[in-house]
Length: 126
Length: 108
Image (cartoon, rainbow over all chains, first blue to last red; front, side, top):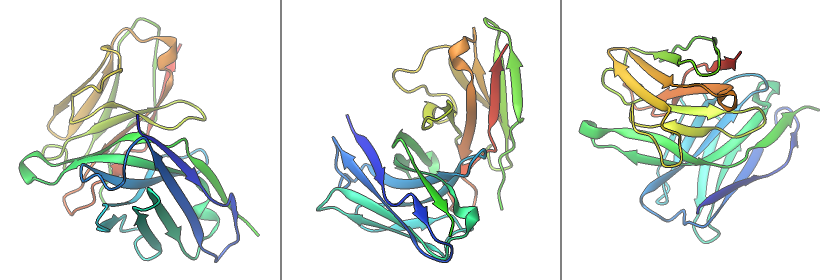
C-alpha cells in the first residue's frame, strides 16, 4: 500500500525559505489518478490546505499563500516538494503531505485526501 | 474567503449518538469530506462524497447532507472515537481544499 514520508529541516529562520520533500513508496507520483497535496497545522489549531501538484506539473495553491508557495514534482525520484518563502513565526506548523483523489467534472466534482504522511514539525525561529 | 463552520466541541456518553455539523454556502453544490485526527497523529479520512465510507472505517460512522449543512454521525460512540473531526469541501472559485475549524469530540 502507498505510504508518504515528509522530510526536511525542522528549524527555519525568519525570512528564509522553508523546503520540504515528500517521498512516495508503494505507488507512483506519475499516476494520473491522483493529485499530490500539502496541508499544514499550526500548534493547537486546525488544518490548512496549502496546495497540490499533478505529475504533469500542474498546480493549484491556497490563495492566502499563493505568493509564497511553490510545489514541484520529481517523477524520477518519486517525490514532490514544497517551498514556502519569506517565512515568519506564523508558518510554524506540522506539515503533512497527502495523496488526493479527484474528479474535475462539474457534474461529479470531488477532491479529497485519502492517504496522509505522518507529518513533520517545522519551527520558524532565529 | 469561503468558510466552513463547525461547532468547537461535542460531548456524548459511550453508546450514544454523536452528530457533528459543518455549514457552508457552497455545500448544496459541493461534496463534503470528513477526517478524524487523534492527538499526535495524522488525519484519517472517515467519510467522502458526503456519505461514502472508505474501506476499514467502522459502519458506525455515517454522513449526510441537507442544504448548506452536512453532518457526521457516529452511532454507538466508543471511547476510541474521541478525537478532533474536520470537514473539508471546495469553494465556488476553484479552491478545492477548504477545511472547517474542527470539532473536538469528547466521550464522557
